[in-house]
Amino acid sequence: MKSNCDVVPPDVKLVLATIKIKSRKLLTPAGGVIKLNACEGILQNNAGICCQGRQAALNRKRCSVKMCLRFWPGCTLSAVLSAAAVFMISTPAKATIRHYSIVQAESQIAASGDVANLPIAGQGAGGTGLSTTYTGTISANRTTTGITFLNTVLDPTTVDADVSGTWKPGVGGGAGSAPGDYGGKINLGTTNFAIRDLVGTFLSSEIPVSSGGFDLSSILFSFIGNSAFDYSYDIFLVGSGSGRQSLVGSDFTSGLTGSGTISAANFVEKLTIPVNVTIPFEDLNGIAALDGQLTLTGQVVATAILPMTPGDFNGDGNVDGADFVAWQTHFPTASGATLAEGDANGDGAVDGADFVIWQTHFPSSGAAGAAPVPEPATGMLLLVGALAAWRRKRSSGARRKH
Image 1: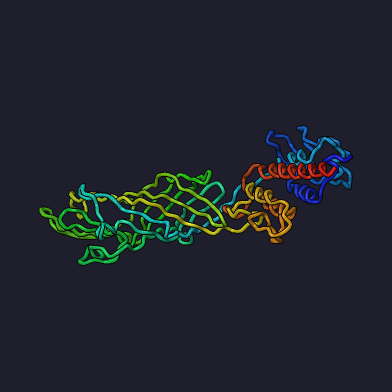
Image 2 (image 1 turned 180 degrees about the vertical axis):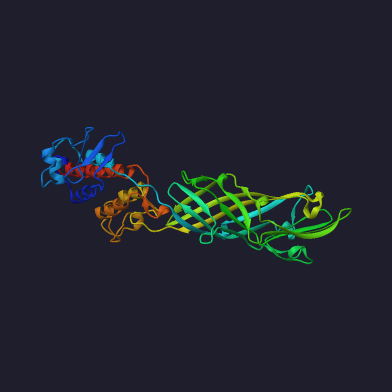
């Protein structure tokens, strides 16, 4: 009677054939050297892994998976695949510049603060005028392990406030009113202000990304272009005046606080950046009594389309263990399968051919231009479990027939 090791179905042969690793020798986690042998995916190493020794058999010119498994009855398919898992090796992640489009409906920032120790209120009906949406682009150098925010001619970051209404004073502090991004007032005589042409930018060195989160404290937020604060006042015993305060410069540059997030699904990467920035005003128009500050609080959400990498079944930009689980869950499927279910080649089936596509691109990440990235042998270890489960099911079915 043949044992499980004596019978290797075609799909398993195909899987084993893909375990031929491109490198000829690699270090094990313990530091031992493992070398490939002539047998499809069967390994020999100096630490006693399954199929160790028997060099004569390994050197045979015609060495099949089936023959190797039969030669050592104690060498199960799972053990062979476990040995092969240590070969999952990666190269350093490459960076790719990504341009995220700010999602207007999800990007909103409100203004609050005080001038002359009096709270700022919105000019509009019901206190409106102190909140607006944002559009624009965020450019970043993205790797699988980090993100660097950029603002260059070719890769700009422009966080652009939308006009929220028509507010006093006019442009430059002139008479009347004009469209503005924010419009506020204080209850001190007649004192109005409007923020116009407000555009912010992010700059940073590389920030580590871990579990989809990253620290914002390394990001510098500043205003660019014609960002400005227009004001006018008429205060008893103080006098009247008006003018424009540019918001561009180091006085209005600050670091962010808190944590941002990066997530991906359906080949779209989503970037969420909470914003909490304070704009100080000192001696506005030369009057010390008009000191104050304005705080902008909210979030900016932006998305970018990820490249489609073969084997990325869940559309998160990575070819990893999660995609293997999608394949494993629906393997085998004869027809009607979708990409999300593990059909990598679009033939409607989930079979060994789809696994080969996944394995060929594993591990890789769209976040790094689909380059191999550091990742443990999780996928191959999952494969061990999947094939072992398949074999148990097949063996159980065979016993029931008898």
